[in-house]
Every structure is written in C-alpha cells, then in structure tokens.
Image (tube, rainbow over all chains, first blue to last red; front, top):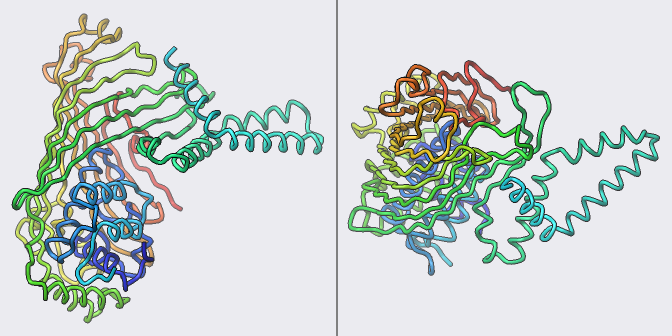
Length: 116
Length: 395
C-alpha cells in the first residue's frame, strides 16, 4: 500500500469520489486521516443493520465510479465479491480511516493509466 | 449452567492461547503487590487495590485483544472467524443496586456474500450467521435485553449510480483533473470549483436504487434461557440516492432542506444545494414470534400463542458545516415496533407498540447535543443511545 499521496490514483480517485458523493468536504491533504464516522453516511444513532445497509450502498457506488465511470479494472485474483466485501468491512468500522479504505481500494483496483 | 460454560470457555481460551501474556500480567500484579507492601500499605489496602485491577474490564479487553492478535498471527486461516467476533468486557450495574458485576457484550457476524453483475443491475446473495447479547458474570446483574442468535439469507439488488463512460480519453482527463484538485488547498477557490464542475461533466453520477430481502430465523432468549422465543421473519431494505444534486430526486429529500439553508448561510455551499445523497434509507421487518418459554407472558396473557410483530427503522444524517477542523453533522434515527393483534391485556399495559426517536448534532471530535423521545422495547434497548431528553457531551 502506498501512503496517502496525490501521486497514488487510488487515493485521488477515492477522495474525489467521496467528495462528489458529499461524504466529505475536506481537501485532499486533510482527508486521509478522516475516520469512517466522519463521513456523511455513518449514522452512529442507527442500528448496525442500517449502517451495514448504508455501507453496502456506498461500496457499490464506489465500485461503479471506479470501473464504469473511470476505467479501472480488478487486480488479478480480485473480483466484485472480494472488492465489495473488503470495502464494506472498512466502511462499517468507525475507527478506520479514509487512507485505510484507499489501501484496500489500491489492492483491489488497477486504475486507468496506473503503473504497477 | 450455560453461563458457567461460557465463562469457562473464555478462561480456557485466555489461558491456552495467551499464557505468555497472562504470565506477564501476573508478574505485573506481583510487582504491584510488592510495591504496595514496600510502601507500607496494609493487607486490606493491598487487597482493595488488587481487586480494583482485577475487576477493571479494561484488563480483560486488553487480554482479549492480545488473544485475537496472537491467534491471528499464529494461524490466520484457522482463526479467521475470530476477526468477525467482537467481544467487549464491561461493568454491569442495576438501577436499584450500587454494586457492580463484570460481564461482556458479544457481537458475532459472519457473512458469506457473492456480488455479481447482470446487465445494468448488480446483485448480491449472502448467507449469514450472527449472535449478539450482553452477559453479566453474576446472574442478578444481567440486563433485560435479549440475546439473539440468527441465521439469515439476503438478496440485494442495486440499480444505477453512474453513467458508464467508454471513452478512454476521458479516463485520462479525469486522472489529470483529480491530480490538480488534490493539489488545491481551498476547495471553495474559483479554480477548485471549476475543476469540480469539469469532473462532474466527465464522470456523470446518476440515481442509485437499492432493495434487499432478508428471510431469517432467530432464537431470542434472556441470559439464563428461562425466556426464549423463535422468530422466523423477513426484512425488506429500501434505499435511493440522487448522487447528482441537480437531479429532481434530490429535491424530494425534504429532510435536508433546513440543512441546505444552513450550509448556504454558513458559506459551506456557494449555492442552495439539497443533498440527494442523504435521502433516508429504511428497513421493514416482519417477525412471527413463537414463544417457547416465558412465564411472565404466560401469566399475563394466559397462553404462549405465537404472534406477529413488525419493526420499522429509518435513519438520516447530513452535513451542516465545517468549523476549523470540526465537521458538524445532524443525525436522526426513528424506530417503531408493534405487536399485531395483541391481546387486550398487552394493549392495556401499553406493551403492544413502542417508538423511539433520537436526533443529535455531532462533531468530529465527539461533541454532541442530542434529544430523544419514546422508548424501545425492553428486548431491544441499546444503551449507547438509550437516553431520553436532552443530552450533551463537550470534549
């Protein structure tokens, strides 16, 4: 996993996507350390079932934007099941940070023009 | 008897897997005793100090975390399930007794899910096992909520979300825009606003719809199993998101209007913008409750006939503003429970319906002001949020 860096496509694509989805409003540098409960979808007052539902919707939309909207493909050995499962695991954990999400996104997707 | 089994199992796990850590803890305790003795403390004072350490749930939380870490390090495949087990030790206290008892809350969730794509829709099928509850080591301190053990199947379908882009030249342009945006500090600057507009034109988000059906079978019981009931049922989840704020669906999100005004007034948004991304999601649940043993209900109603019950839950959260490093959010949650065709005696006791509403202003650092009204059924209380009236916390 690369650090939270603007030179990493996973980081910049994730950040701009979350920003466009109104999940965060901070600039790139301030966004890596945000926790999941700092994102708009994470309602700590709801039941765990409702939070899982919200996390699943967010994960599905991230996958949409990465692959259908931005030309990313799955890394070797990764499919939609693994990518979604890994993202949901992070999204439902209030202590995880945006950079943790970027890490598993980086592992799961090969972004357009990304050098490996 | 079952309680002793649970406690014994946990003790055996601790002893066998984290023996090294236990030894370390014993050594630490011995050091504490030695230091207290050297300090001239009486046996009674030493006993009280050691008891304070032993009765501190944080000690057991540390041991549990250590156990998980060590086990996973030893064999990540064999102990993979442990990652899904959330155990937290804590102190229990009843409302009419100042004494306390150690105990733990457990929450185990295992899901096997498969996510597939079919034309424009995405589907997931999952099978899950879950168990959750609170258990005090001394029976009389057990809370009134139920333990729940559940197997469930879930079918979900996602529709829409983004307009598929097939022009590879656009992918490159998107990368360049993203890189430029990441280099800008002020997201309200003219340059940033223009770049966000360009990004929105090249990567077009559409409305996303979601629904899920989850048939399940659960066993609910109190901690000593003197009350237990089987609850087959089905849940229906509904969700819709208008990711593009200009889409008409966004304007149907009436809950966000007051906050759109606040965002506009505080300069958080340059224009009056209703967030379609915060449209509340909802869950409806229908259960057919089959009581197996419940002396209280039997005495009250005169029988243990099965009965249907419904539950509805919805949640809303939206962004208000950012003050220095603090993000301010508005959160709300509403839950409604009803026993259908409840016997008169249940209705007269006002036990057939319950509703609970809570809303809160929350900030990143933990500051919150909340207001709650209503009540949850006794078997569904969540102490994290169960506090009526105004509450606040300043960090």
